[in-house]
Amino acid sequence: MNLTRWSARLPGTQRRGAVPAARAKTADPAAAPAAGRGLLGTGRADTAPATGAAAYAADGSVQVTGAPPIPEVLTSLPALIAVTHGSAHRVGFVNDAYTDVFGPRSTGAPAREALPELDELGLLPLMDQVHRSGKPRTVKARKVTHGDTTAVTRQGYFTFTCTPVDADDPDPERRGVLVFAADVTDQVLSADRLRESERRLHETAVTLQRSLLPQELEQPDDLRVAATYQPGGTDAAVGGDWYDVITLGAGRTALVIGDVMGRGVRAAAVMGQLRTAVRAYARLDLPPHEVIQLLDGLASEIDATQIATCVYAVHDPSEGRLSYASAGHLPIVIRDPDGTVRRAEEPTGPPLGTGGWIHTSGSIPLGPGCTAVLYTDGLIERRDQDIDDGITALTGALAGATGSPQVVCDRLLRALGVTSEHDDDVAVLVLQYPDRTGDDAELFRNASLDLLGGVEAAPRARAFASGVLASWRFPVELRDLGVLAASELVANSLKHGHPPMRLRLRRTDRRLIIEVTDGDEHLPRRRRAEPGDESGRGISIIATIASGWGSRRTPGGGKAVWCEFALPEYPAETE
Image (cartoon, rainbow, N blue to C red; front, side):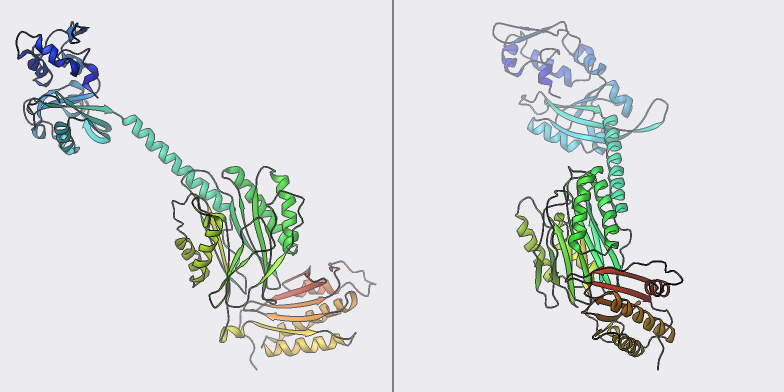
């Protein structure tokens, strides 16, 4: 509050430029200072001139006539007002609104004694600054506890403005400070409610986002997997970053990460539909580029205005490679056991929903001891640098990031400066293919046999399977089931497929996998055999005795038919 603006209305105050002229027209040289002291005095009406209506004289001075006394004007104001003078801030006036909040206050004593609440609110040092500098100061939304007429204690918030009075007076004891307090309780409470509402909306948005992501990642037999999601910003907008891990059977694992551009419920809805579609397409066990091709068509049907990127990868431990296809997404980075970091640069296509593009699959070695990282742009993209610089920073951070997948996730976030204040969503998916040694290596074995010749390949396959399963010390019951499954798969391949053919056995710490590949692309299907049929029962037998089975086309042409058995919880048979 600046009293200079009142100078044309209030008695005893004038525009600063007109003060010398006004004093020059006063018969008594002490009249002008006395008028000033009417504001800083005891607050009695007879201490101030009874004139107040403004009129300008020819010399530019202000003549005030007909206004009520200053104390009466200040007393009628709803704001809290106190006036002090001198370096000790002796109280000269307090209005009724002030006493309603803080109780009756006496005048004449220093503010530290007469107005202790100002000391408790930390205003006395501020008043010292105003008294010395002659410049107003303000503190906002100070919490005040007071009692009303019913003796009920209430809390409110006031914004205090300390304004200099008679700042041009050379005598410091005649200079004063006017304390003006406006009740801002409603505004503060409204702001608190708004912040609380925004906090709850943000928590709801994050909960919605996390509910659309996997609640618990599938843990494949051969891989160690961890993921992290860091929501960006503090607003209630939901992001579109997502990831998933899908076990395909036969030891193979699909990994996917994507990003729907923009924020809000629409982005989250598109993200949820794409994630559901990926899981459905993955169950078909299609090559990565065919999954991306299906997603491309689906994305344009869901919402043609939304841009989404995605990378879909499949890891096959028997081949030691990661096959992938990318729709406008950032490259996968892989750390070798020696610390070398590689990028899966090609191939890549445009984002999902663009249509008209034929996607292709690529592959990159991922052998024992390797770590792969799939991520969204929030991890590496910064407004002040090129995205290639961000990828370079990621490769440097990954080169030194060791430990479990979750530890690698945390280290990458720290190394790239991702905090809770980050302005973009971040999703990171880390997978490791452990290099198993010692007793652990005994639980992960591979064996394969090329099926050469005609019908004589079947007995050789049975003998091979029996010997391998015996060497792996499986229980007799599981060994017999495994030999039967291998025999049926080989017989099916000999009847309906063509060379090259191969029988492959694989064990993990949780399952036995039997797989037969051949050069024919026709996928078998389970059907009901009639009583008189001499064939058509092989797949039904496999589906009955095994815990799971499936088939897929292989990248080089041909197909693979597999089944798997869950290992018993009791110890393996010893010889």
